[in-house]
Length: 287
Image 1: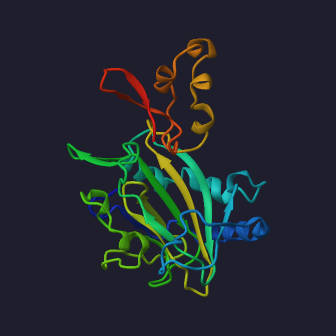
Image 2: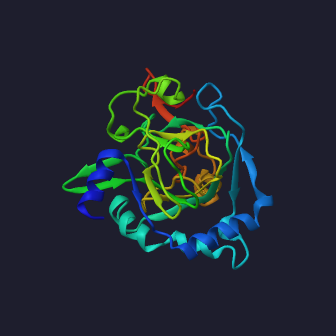
Protein backbone atom coordinates (compact mmCIF):
# COMPACT_ATOMS: atom_id res chain seq x y z
CA UNK A 1 0.00 0.00 0.00
CA UNK A 2 1.29 3.46 -0.81
CA UNK A 3 0.82 6.46 1.47
CA UNK A 4 -2.39 7.56 -0.26
CA UNK A 5 -4.02 4.15 0.12
CA UNK A 6 -2.97 3.91 3.78
CA UNK A 7 -4.43 7.33 4.46
CA UNK A 8 -7.73 6.58 2.72
CA UNK A 9 -8.06 3.15 4.37
CA UNK A 10 -7.30 4.45 7.85
CA UNK A 11 -9.63 7.43 7.41
CA UNK A 12 -12.66 5.78 5.79
CA UNK A 13 -12.49 2.03 6.52
CA UNK A 14 -12.76 1.01 2.86
CA UNK A 15 -10.61 1.15 -0.26
CA UNK A 16 -11.29 0.66 -3.98
CA UNK A 17 -8.40 -0.54 -6.15
CA UNK A 18 -9.01 0.06 -9.84
CA UNK A 19 -8.54 -2.28 -12.82
CA UNK A 20 -7.23 -5.30 -10.94
CA UNK A 21 -8.78 -7.84 -13.31
CA UNK A 22 -7.73 -7.88 -16.95
CA UNK A 23 -10.46 -8.03 -19.64
CA UNK A 24 -9.62 -11.73 -20.14
CA UNK A 25 -9.88 -12.51 -16.42
CA UNK A 26 -13.12 -10.57 -16.17
CA UNK A 27 -14.64 -12.48 -19.10
CA UNK A 28 -13.60 -15.84 -17.64
CA UNK A 29 -15.24 -15.01 -14.30
CA UNK A 30 -18.47 -13.77 -15.90
CA UNK A 31 -18.60 -16.81 -18.19
CA UNK A 32 -18.31 -19.08 -15.16
CA UNK A 33 -21.10 -17.26 -13.34
CA UNK A 34 -23.38 -17.54 -16.35
CA UNK A 35 -22.52 -21.23 -16.73
CA UNK A 36 -23.94 -21.88 -13.25
CA UNK A 37 -26.93 -19.54 -13.38
CA UNK A 38 -29.20 -22.46 -12.44
CA UNK A 39 -27.46 -22.71 -9.04
CA UNK A 40 -28.41 -19.23 -7.85
CA UNK A 41 -30.55 -19.20 -4.71
CA UNK A 42 -32.39 -16.46 -2.85
CA UNK A 43 -31.07 -15.01 0.39
CA UNK A 44 -32.70 -12.64 2.86
CA UNK A 45 -29.85 -12.52 5.40
CA UNK A 46 -29.86 -9.06 7.03
CA UNK A 47 -32.76 -8.04 4.80
CA UNK A 48 -34.13 -4.64 5.80
CA UNK A 49 -37.55 -5.89 6.85
CA UNK A 50 -38.01 -2.98 9.28
CA UNK A 51 -36.84 -0.45 6.68
CA UNK A 52 -38.80 1.41 4.05
CA UNK A 53 -35.68 2.44 2.13
CA UNK A 54 -34.26 -1.07 1.75
CA UNK A 55 -37.32 -2.96 0.54
CA UNK A 56 -37.21 -5.05 -2.63
CA UNK A 57 -37.18 -8.54 -4.08
CA UNK A 58 -35.00 -11.32 -2.53
CA UNK A 59 -31.28 -11.13 -3.24
CA UNK A 60 -29.88 -13.84 -5.59
CA UNK A 61 -26.62 -15.44 -4.43
CA UNK A 62 -24.25 -18.10 -5.71
CA UNK A 63 -21.92 -20.14 -3.48
CA UNK A 64 -19.46 -22.99 -3.96
CA UNK A 65 -17.35 -21.08 -6.49
CA UNK A 66 -14.07 -22.72 -5.43
CA UNK A 67 -15.66 -26.15 -5.84
CA UNK A 68 -16.78 -25.75 -9.45
CA UNK A 69 -15.22 -28.24 -11.82
CA UNK A 70 -12.32 -27.02 -13.93
CA UNK A 71 -12.01 -24.71 -15.75
CA UNK A 72 -14.95 -22.89 -14.13
CA UNK A 73 -13.37 -22.71 -10.66
CA UNK A 74 -10.09 -21.24 -11.91
CA UNK A 75 -11.13 -17.55 -12.15
CA UNK A 76 -12.16 -17.60 -8.48
CA UNK A 77 -9.22 -19.65 -7.22
CA UNK A 78 -6.96 -17.11 -8.89
CA UNK A 79 -8.60 -14.42 -6.74
CA UNK A 80 -7.83 -16.09 -3.38
CA UNK A 81 -4.15 -15.07 -3.25
CA UNK A 82 -4.02 -12.45 -6.00
CA UNK A 83 -0.96 -10.16 -5.78
CA UNK A 84 -3.19 -7.08 -5.37
CA UNK A 85 -4.69 -8.72 -2.25
CA UNK A 86 -1.46 -10.01 -0.73
CA UNK A 87 0.21 -6.61 -0.98
CA UNK A 88 -2.61 -4.93 0.93
CA UNK A 89 -3.79 -7.63 3.34
CA UNK A 90 -0.22 -8.00 4.63
CA UNK A 91 -0.62 -4.39 5.81
CA UNK A 92 -4.29 -4.46 6.78
CA UNK A 93 -4.40 -7.79 8.66
CA UNK A 94 -0.69 -8.42 9.13
CA UNK A 95 1.57 -11.16 7.71
CA UNK A 96 0.01 -14.58 7.98
CA UNK A 97 -3.51 -13.39 7.15
CA UNK A 98 -5.87 -16.21 6.24
CA UNK A 99 -8.90 -16.79 4.06
CA UNK A 100 -11.69 -17.40 6.55
CA UNK A 101 -14.89 -18.08 4.63
CA UNK A 102 -16.66 -17.59 1.33
CA UNK A 103 -16.56 -16.83 -1.49
CA UNK A 104 -20.13 -15.76 -2.15
CA UNK A 105 -21.40 -14.05 -5.26
CA UNK A 106 -24.04 -11.46 -4.43
CA UNK A 107 -26.23 -10.80 -7.40
CA UNK A 108 -29.02 -8.40 -8.07
CA UNK A 109 -31.50 -7.31 -10.69
CA UNK A 110 -33.38 -4.04 -10.73
CA UNK A 111 -35.49 -3.92 -7.57
CA UNK A 112 -33.42 -6.33 -5.47
CA UNK A 113 -33.62 -5.47 -1.76
CA UNK A 114 -30.86 -3.92 0.30
CA UNK A 115 -29.41 -5.13 3.57
CA UNK A 116 -29.56 -3.45 6.94
CA UNK A 117 -26.40 -1.57 7.89
CA UNK A 118 -24.38 -3.38 10.53
CA UNK A 119 -20.90 -3.49 12.01
CA UNK A 120 -19.04 -0.61 13.68
CA UNK A 121 -18.08 -2.88 16.55
CA UNK A 122 -21.61 -3.09 17.94
CA UNK A 123 -21.21 -5.07 20.10
CA UNK A 124 -17.41 -4.88 20.41
CA UNK A 125 -15.82 -7.85 18.66
CA UNK A 126 -12.07 -7.89 19.29
CA UNK A 127 -11.47 -10.38 16.47
CA UNK A 128 -12.58 -7.87 13.82
CA UNK A 129 -11.83 -4.55 15.54
CA UNK A 130 -9.55 -1.89 14.03
CA UNK A 131 -6.46 -0.74 15.90
CA UNK A 132 -3.51 1.50 15.04
CA UNK A 133 -0.38 1.73 17.12
CA UNK A 134 3.29 2.66 16.59
CA UNK A 135 2.72 3.46 12.95
CA UNK A 136 1.09 0.11 12.10
CA UNK A 137 -2.54 -0.65 11.41
CA UNK A 138 -4.35 -3.83 12.34
CA UNK A 139 -7.86 -5.07 11.58
CA UNK A 140 -8.98 -8.60 12.32
CA UNK A 141 -11.54 -8.89 9.52
CA UNK A 142 -11.38 -7.64 5.94
CA UNK A 143 -13.84 -8.45 3.18
CA UNK A 144 -12.58 -8.29 -0.40
CA UNK A 145 -15.30 -7.77 -3.01
CA UNK A 146 -14.48 -8.33 -6.69
CA UNK A 147 -16.70 -6.41 -9.09
CA UNK A 148 -17.69 -8.30 -12.24
CA UNK A 149 -20.05 -5.56 -13.45
CA UNK A 150 -20.09 -1.77 -13.18
CA UNK A 151 -21.53 -0.07 -10.11
CA UNK A 152 -22.38 3.52 -11.00
CA UNK A 153 -23.46 6.33 -8.70
CA UNK A 154 -26.98 5.58 -7.48
CA UNK A 155 -26.97 1.94 -8.65
CA UNK A 156 -27.08 0.60 -5.08
CA UNK A 157 -25.19 -2.37 -3.72
CA UNK A 158 -22.43 -1.99 -1.16
CA UNK A 159 -22.80 1.06 1.07
CA UNK A 160 -20.99 2.15 4.20
CA UNK A 161 -20.52 4.93 6.72
CA UNK A 162 -16.95 6.14 6.16
CA UNK A 163 -15.00 6.57 9.39
CA UNK A 164 -17.49 4.55 11.45
CA UNK A 165 -14.73 2.10 12.46
CA UNK A 166 -13.52 4.89 14.78
CA UNK A 167 -16.90 6.03 16.05
CA UNK A 168 -17.49 6.09 19.82
CA UNK A 169 -21.25 6.43 19.63
CA UNK A 170 -24.03 3.97 18.90
CA UNK A 171 -25.43 3.98 15.38
CA UNK A 172 -28.86 5.69 15.21
CA UNK A 173 -31.67 3.39 14.08
CA UNK A 174 -32.43 5.63 11.08
CA UNK A 175 -28.89 5.09 9.78
CA UNK A 176 -29.14 1.35 10.32
CA UNK A 177 -32.32 1.18 8.23
CA UNK A 178 -31.26 3.98 5.83
CA UNK A 179 -34.66 5.62 6.39
CA UNK A 180 -32.92 8.62 8.00
CA UNK A 181 -29.29 8.19 7.03
CA UNK A 182 -28.23 11.75 8.05
CA UNK A 183 -26.26 11.98 4.81
CA UNK A 184 -23.50 9.74 6.17
CA UNK A 185 -24.16 6.62 4.04
CA UNK A 186 -21.94 6.37 0.95
CA UNK A 187 -22.28 4.03 -2.05
CA UNK A 188 -18.91 3.94 -3.87
CA UNK A 189 -18.95 3.88 -7.67
CA UNK A 190 -16.85 1.08 -9.18
CA UNK A 191 -16.14 -0.45 -12.56
CA UNK A 192 -16.00 -4.09 -13.60
CA UNK A 193 -12.55 -5.35 -12.66
CA UNK A 194 -12.21 -3.13 -9.60
CA UNK A 195 -11.71 -4.61 -6.12
CA UNK A 196 -13.22 -3.25 -2.91
CA UNK A 197 -11.65 -3.80 0.53
CA UNK A 198 -13.66 -2.97 3.64
CA UNK A 199 -13.35 -3.50 7.39
CA UNK A 200 -15.98 -6.16 7.92
CA UNK A 201 -17.27 -5.85 11.48
CA UNK A 202 -15.31 -2.73 12.40
CA UNK A 203 -17.07 -0.50 9.86
CA UNK A 204 -20.80 0.12 9.46
CA UNK A 205 -21.77 -1.35 6.10
CA UNK A 206 -24.64 -2.96 4.24
CA UNK A 207 -26.26 -2.61 0.84
CA UNK A 208 -28.76 -0.34 -0.87
CA UNK A 209 -31.46 -1.71 -3.20
CA UNK A 210 -30.20 -2.39 -6.72
CA UNK A 211 -31.58 0.11 -9.25
CA UNK A 212 -29.53 -0.55 -12.39
CA UNK A 213 -30.81 -2.32 -15.49
CA UNK A 214 -27.47 -4.17 -15.52
CA UNK A 215 -27.20 -7.09 -13.07
CA UNK A 216 -25.09 -6.79 -9.95
CA UNK A 217 -22.20 -9.26 -9.62
CA UNK A 218 -19.96 -8.85 -6.58
CA UNK A 219 -17.88 -11.76 -5.25
CA UNK A 220 -17.05 -11.56 -1.55
CA UNK A 221 -14.03 -13.25 0.04
CA UNK A 222 -13.73 -12.98 3.85
CA UNK A 223 -10.21 -12.71 5.29
CA UNK A 224 -8.97 -12.63 8.87
CA UNK A 225 -5.79 -12.11 10.82
CA UNK A 226 -3.95 -15.37 11.49
CA UNK A 227 -5.08 -15.40 15.14
CA UNK A 228 -8.77 -14.94 14.34
CA UNK A 229 -11.51 -17.41 13.39
CA UNK A 230 -14.51 -15.52 12.04
CA UNK A 231 -16.42 -18.44 10.56
CA UNK A 232 -15.77 -21.64 8.70
CA UNK A 233 -15.38 -24.98 10.50
CA UNK A 234 -14.79 -23.48 13.96
CA UNK A 235 -18.49 -23.98 14.72
CA UNK A 236 -18.14 -27.73 14.16
CA UNK A 237 -14.99 -28.16 16.25
CA UNK A 238 -15.48 -25.62 19.02
CA UNK A 239 -17.39 -27.64 21.62
CA UNK A 240 -15.25 -28.90 24.53
CA UNK A 241 -15.72 -32.63 23.81
CA UNK A 242 -14.42 -32.14 20.25
CA UNK A 243 -11.78 -29.45 20.77
CA UNK A 244 -10.21 -31.38 23.68
CA UNK A 245 -9.77 -35.10 24.04
CA UNK A 246 -12.96 -36.49 25.53
CA UNK A 247 -11.26 -37.89 28.63
CA UNK A 248 -9.92 -34.43 29.53
CA UNK A 249 -13.37 -32.87 29.86
CA UNK A 250 -15.29 -35.95 31.03
CA UNK A 251 -17.05 -35.25 34.31
CA UNK A 252 -16.39 -31.49 34.31
CA UNK A 253 -19.02 -29.19 35.76
CA UNK A 254 -21.03 -26.86 33.54
CA UNK A 255 -18.93 -23.95 34.78
CA UNK A 256 -15.65 -25.70 34.00
CA UNK A 257 -16.83 -26.68 30.54
CA UNK A 258 -17.68 -23.03 29.83
CA UNK A 259 -13.98 -22.15 29.56
CA UNK A 260 -13.01 -25.25 27.56
CA UNK A 261 -14.58 -24.15 24.27
CA UNK A 262 -12.26 -23.72 21.31
CA UNK A 263 -11.92 -20.45 19.32
CA UNK A 264 -15.39 -19.69 18.02
CA UNK A 265 -16.14 -16.03 17.35
CA UNK A 266 -19.49 -16.09 15.55
CA UNK A 267 -21.17 -18.38 18.05
CA UNK A 268 -24.45 -16.40 18.29
CA UNK A 269 -24.67 -16.99 22.04
CA UNK A 270 -23.95 -20.72 21.97
CA UNK A 271 -20.70 -20.35 23.91
CA UNK A 272 -21.53 -19.85 27.61
CA UNK A 273 -19.98 -17.10 29.72
CA UNK A 274 -19.29 -16.99 33.46
CA UNK A 275 -20.06 -14.65 36.33
CA UNK A 276 -19.43 -14.63 40.08
CA UNK A 277 -22.58 -14.29 42.21
CA UNK A 278 -22.93 -12.40 45.48
CA UNK A 279 -21.83 -15.47 47.43
CA UNK A 280 -18.57 -15.62 45.47
CA UNK A 281 -19.61 -18.70 43.51
CA UNK A 282 -18.81 -19.02 39.81
CA UNK A 283 -21.97 -19.54 37.74
CA UNK A 284 -22.84 -19.86 34.08
CA UNK A 285 -24.48 -16.62 33.03
CA UNK A 286 -27.90 -17.03 31.48
CA UNK A 287 -29.43 -14.64 28.95
